[in-house]
Length: 92
Image (cartoon, rainbow, N blue to C red; front, side, top):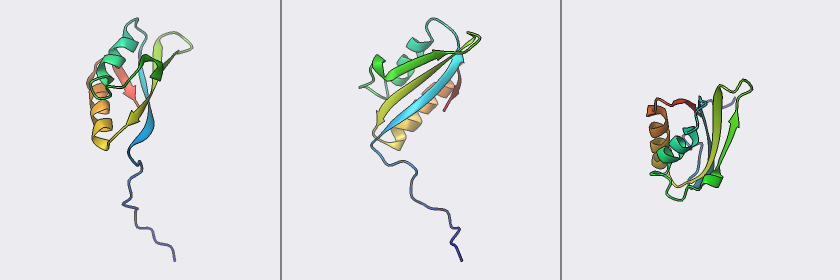
């Protein structure tokens, strides 16, 4: 017989390195917007932590940001800031 009780252990252990992928419509200032949204919650964020990729048709831009996250609260605040922006279509 196997125990099917869900684990109460957190999926992430902090501090940790974490990558967030952000999608938006192609715009010349999209990378700067993302940087400005994340920076208040990740003071050590450098522009080198961001990698961008244009979609095949050139309509969308995806940005991967690798951060050193100290706590769940910090990660939640970053996701809230990103998802509240009308420029961000999706953040994973």
